[in-house]
Amino acid sequence: MALNSNYELFERYPDNPILSVDKWPYKANSVFNAAAAKLGDDTILLARVEDYRGISHLTAAKSTDGITDWQIDPNPTFKPEPEKYPEEIWGIEDPRITWIEQMNKWAVCYTSYSKGGPLVSLAMTEDFKTFQRLGPVMPPEDKDAALFPLTFNGLWAMLHRPTPRSALLGAHIWISFSPNLKHWGEHQEIIRAREGGWWDANKIGLCAPPMHTDSGWLVLYHGVRTTASGSIYRLGLALLDPENPTKLIRRTDEWIFGPKTPYEREGDVDDVVFPCGWIKKDGKVFIYYGAADSRICLATADFQQLLDFVLKCPHNDCMN
Ligand code: BMA
Image 1 (cartoon, rainbow, N blue to C red):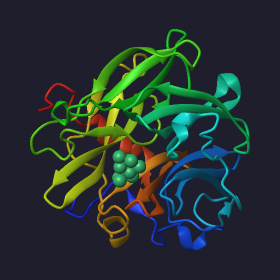
Image 2 (cartoon, rainbow, N blue to C red):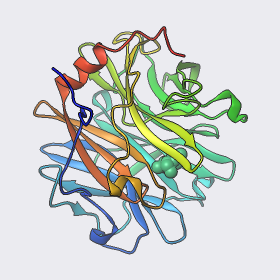
Image 3 (cartoon, rainbow, N blue to C red):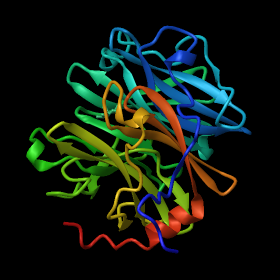
């Protein structure tokens, strides 16, 4: 198929944004970077809501078609509790949800904004009403984390993005393992930010949780391009070995989605698309993304086309 220069794997929902502060049941500055999950026939989003202090919490919104008629919780669903969890002092942000069949629970990885910097926290829920915290699972600075839905050789696995003190070293995606979801080890870097002029040079991070496919674990990640007028957040795909997720087998050279429309290009932070959740439904992938740190938008792609695209991409041996 010949692709014209405007071709994109993802199609934006024409009535974007699907959720914004205008439709929010209480006062908030912005809603963005929502996690997504299928709850029976419904879709649930756990949105990051930033209040007028600049502190974020999470609120759930539910919809039957995953597009319209969102039932938004009238009050914050999951609030920072700095009295009991001091690492949540400056808010909780950017959740990612994984269904853990073995426990009949959802795992929510989120960023706690501690006085030592952002870190990864983990909580479990059965209903998106009450949450049992496991507490901080990675020290700062670390964020952009999600669990795999099952164990590998008896160990849970998590993707995350520690940030080295020197920006010169770049920020890359790591994997870690745990016997109990609380104590993590066997840390190793698996996807490196590229260098130089690449769209994903120097800083990358996981977006939505790894998606299981017959060909491997599909990973949606963001690359941050630093320019004279700020950063541009765009998305790429990677594929990890189905049996051994420490092994990167494919990676897109090109970004597959980036800020284009006014609602992605202008907001509290310009030029950002930032999905924290994606859902597979009727042969399609729905990605829910924060646009310009100000609103929640939807784009869809054909699942098979997405997978075919990544399978045609180079093996990970010609990176830089
Ligand atoms: C990242 C995260 C996201 C945010 C993005 C763009 O570092 O903190 O929450 O959407 O920056 O501002």
